[in-house]
Picture (tube, rainbow, N blue to C red):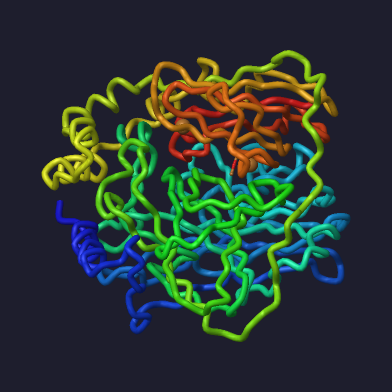
Length: 519
Ligand code: C2O
Ligand code: CU
Ligand code: CU
């Protein structure tokens, strides 16, 4: 099967060969490159309503043809929802597609019945009405469909957007806050195209093992765009909106990244990093000092995640150019950010264990091993013949039967069942949970609905400072564990329970999800 992706690989390598990367070289010329699309903000109207319509569209990403897409109030991706703490808004999520969907507010703390989970199905032509009381700290959340078992495909086609909460505390800090000027949304997604220009997606053995492996990057829906920004401190709101891929974000000129917020809001103080790991579904707000007006690239470095080091991700890949040649702005980086409540010193002993499991791990990993992927990874360098064999497995491997797909992966030994709510959680109590994995050694960024939690320990050690604040995703890998302090403020009934699942969407759609009520 002749595939476009091969051509993109060649293009991608040429661009890399031209010298972008970590040697402090200049970004590729902005000429002929797209500018970074800025998803426009949407606020509640005078009646307190926000209308989101999931609809079909087309967009030209690649030369081989227009891509059939989905978008919210547009062709691809959706507007940025903007609400304030204390506000009550009603979101009307309308389905103008030909298939069932839902709309979930990822990271929002609200009632189970308005969560937009797989239980809040929106039929074609239907509307899901969610009256939401915004009562949590300022944060960069996001929204995406959560229909079981086609979440992965709905997101690939383009259904996702940012959901930003503002509050008094964050507004008083003097942080950059001019949307698209010095407050810049960055939505990272990888894609793969079929020969006809449509997005490739297939639930085959590789997909349910590694998750989606793209070979083409989109940043806010554009490939290697240029963001023309203010000349000043910039606040980058990063969302890893990829189905499965992790990134290691770095500035091409090695300038520091000051992490100011994680999934659920501001940290106590900025954390200076040179390199930031981001797993599927995670958000970080990062400040960069661009007062020098010098252009640089955001780059992703190769990651260890299985299958994710194929070209063009086998070497540093530029994602977007930040070109700070606009007007000077006066947003600043404060020394301290938000009040972070201390951890509960009297946390009860562990009341819940969530064990991610993969029933077909041996088969899936067997295919990759046979193709030579594990051997290649050990050498640390790229072997084109191996990459070609793995790409063939990704693109040509037959789709699993629905039954095989739905039973491939598990939480606590069971594949997800919409009609079963395996456990109940006490409301308004600080709890200690453990997240772990079975015998596989895959990465699982585990997400829990209806809460923001705190990571107590990763693999037994205290978490690094930038993930010690509010989180709704806990990454586990290599047989590791993650211990969290978690609390649920709102009820969720057995008929509209909260989900806990791996945010590798192909894992989620193949059984690595469970649900629980809160009372
Ligand atoms: Cu971002 Cu349960 O999802
Ligand atoms: Cu969620
Ligand atoms: Cu997983």
